[in-house]
Length: 156
Image 1 (cartoon, rainbow, N blue to C red):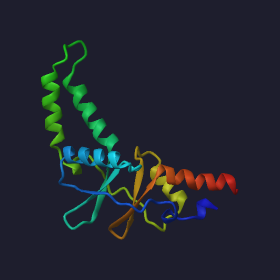
Image 2: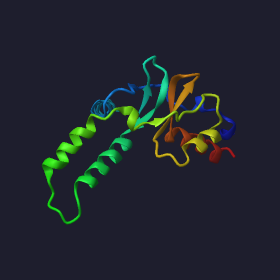
Image 3: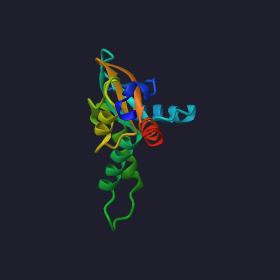
Image 4: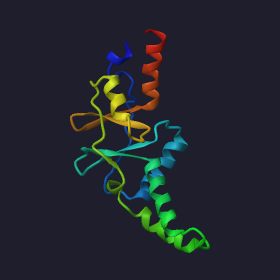
């Protein structure tokens, strides 16, 4: 039964990391590289100075940040000041990943699929880092959870 199965059975073992000290412009470039290489999971696992797990960041996090910058630099009824928006976006792109990431959101490879569901609830993430000790070993995607549920539906 899938809910008795473990995260490691459904995770993607590829790990794409970025330093917590990297800027958002570098993160955007890494996401662009993921997309051009056909990588399906749009998350970067954030590591610290000793390659230890720190958190996760996804494209949506950066887009939300940029939207708030755009909204705060464009007042309703005002003419669009493209130079002002551009300046704010350039400044925002220099922010560090650690300022935007989801800190310490992860799951153990031995956790149950039900525990994974609980971790996903209320978080706007396309994938959960799978961490063994303090070392990232993969990502559990929403698709991985759907595979587990599909198994439950097919074999109740």
